[in-house]
Length: 338
Length: 189
Image (tube, rainbow over all chains, first blue to last red; front, side):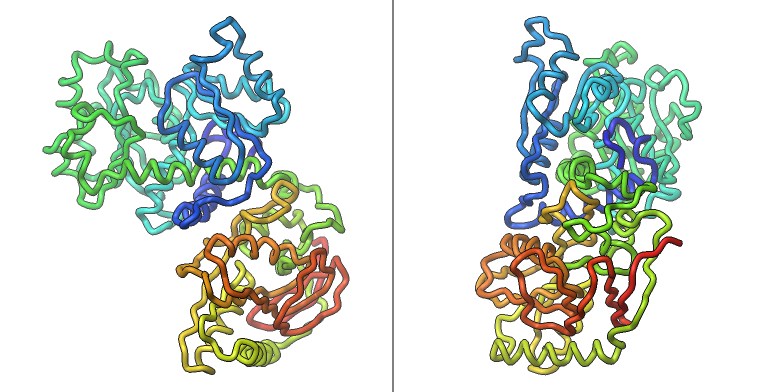
């Protein structure tokens, strides 16, 4: 795994598979009577949220706490940013307190990447930057789909995924596309022409303005919220018009396959992208997504902070010959000494 | 050990080369049978006994011990598995990845737990396993069974049941499988 997680491209298919496999172990921890392990004891994780969030922030903080890390919580609204401190100084100040990972969300694309240039030691996890990327959301979507396929790593190959809604303004959609395509799924974007990105060339997806044309054969229907705070409303005649054409109404819910999986990254706006009754159907796995989000984020933090020399040991540099820990016995054929 | 961690841990171009077979498949079978008898003797039966295999090498041995014990005492001896990755003290020092999912479906409070692993070396996995077991209840007693004790302990830990005591040098490797026990080392391809 790379030092930072900025986008799905940092992982590739092997990296995604690794995260999903490690997530299995953390999902088991979550099922225990005491869902807490000492894995990241002594590590400090800071959440820097320059944009509102409920589930992502709480999910990351829960994940860090379940691994016994200390969590520093930063909210832009109550910080020295209000006194005119720059983003760079804010980030450097927080690192100076001695932290190991920064989880960052910002309304501008590229802030997480910029932060990696300002920080010397800390790992950076992108928890959403502008329209660009939200990798942990995509990973938890994939984990949820894989879980519903009995944990089969190969379940994505040929899977028909339809992503519906405001693709243009959606970092979630961009990360979902990257992740599903990397794993071999067939992705179709369904959106009004105004909410389709100007070009999807190079995305490796199909695009349509007619949801009903593709809905019936979808294995996964992934809904997006109309992001009025990013001005999506101006691209639509009205929300009712959107719902009529692209909402998962009761009528459309009858036409999806009985085993189709309906996902939504939240927050879900009932009555716009999904009808209230439909949101409560057994195909809709929104609460499962939230539960899996904690386990996926535990896996991401563990892979970034826990397996220190993974990248080096996997390279060409051999580990020291006589380490004080189990060292070389972890290699092929030999048993780890207990 | 899971292929996943093996690939991370092994420097590229280095393979395990077996030098000598120290136990045949039959030797391993006999050791399992003897250890099962010792477990019954020490615990006066198998009441409240639970076997926990340490992922991944200990799991097949734990399953074989459980089957032997069940046949011996005409009782059903439960068997679980434990992955200790999250409890290791070398997290951040070397690649540590979960090898398999922990599977312990009972409360261990008041039970006698026999932890089973293939090779006992530094003792650090057992230390981690003792911490991990605590999350599943307060066992009445915890014992340790290993197929091979190769020495070089770094912690005050000793096994209760041993298949074979095998003097080794630190840089050697011990491989326990269905086919028996091999002693070897890492060599460049």
